[in-house]
Length: 375
Ligand SMILES: Cc1ncc(COP(=O)(O)O)c(C=O)c1O
Image 1 (tube, rainbow, N blue to C red):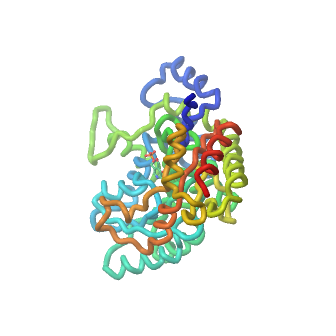
Image 2: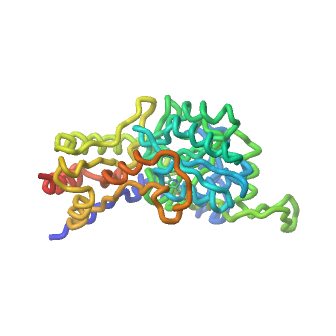
Image 3: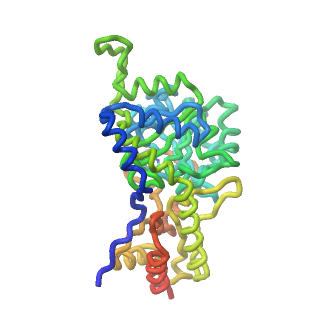
């Protein structure tokens, strides 16, 4: 008998999304902006603490706009986490700027000491650091205060990539808060989803207003279509925002459930030899978007890839940790300060199925297979 597939992180609707979508349909606000979009932005401001939010077609678009508005261009270097998803860093290349990667510390997020070194290296080459983009990996915030303390003396803005961290906190504040700007993703695999989408947040009203203009083809204020600069088609649609409103209503429940799922896996599997789990930094509360474990192949008796294949054979999806950017062929020429910690996470890491709708029976199915491949 084949079991139903257990996915890594499938969309999970809370139940009210369709009501919000129906409201959008009933008022014929199908395209492009409308009351649900405005309400989603307002609700997201309330959630994150940022004064202004702009809903966009993706998190990648949000990073692109943020960096462009910070003036990042072909003469600049942007310093970013190496242990991340590629969408975090591709906007740097869209702008013709140079990348420089930085390794993580034991929190799996950007190491502030290595960031200081990276800034020194870039400046010694006579180049300007246009921005620093740390990723909040797998829903755990980077140490913003420590990173800001490194950036501030140089006047370098911090754009926090909190794509994976909606619902997580740093010293009691929502993920991303405290950055000059922060971005979030509502891609289909994220803790809450709008099927696809993103958010740019900042306290700077002029910054968000200009981002809004650029996200709508940079139309100037005129009755006809007048353009003095090049923009993008990056706006989120009102119908999509309606889904987001429903999802926001269940965010707290999802964070609680994902933390439970993490704790379940940890208590079930960490007694096994050679298995440990992604640590939680003392300064915050991770949303545990994905539960990630580290496998010592010798001690456990099987590699993460062997475990992944054993799970796949039973119709269960799992995935290696993000392959660090400095190991990607496309970035073979990009400099990286440090790198060994991320390489080790990639080598030993495995992301376990972490959908917020998973049942105890699903979790037991996963754990049973993992136990069976160890020695
Ligand atoms: C860390 C990180 N940054 C950026 C992105 C890009 O977001 P999007 O897919 O909404 O463009 C993602 C995920 O999708 C991500 O995980």
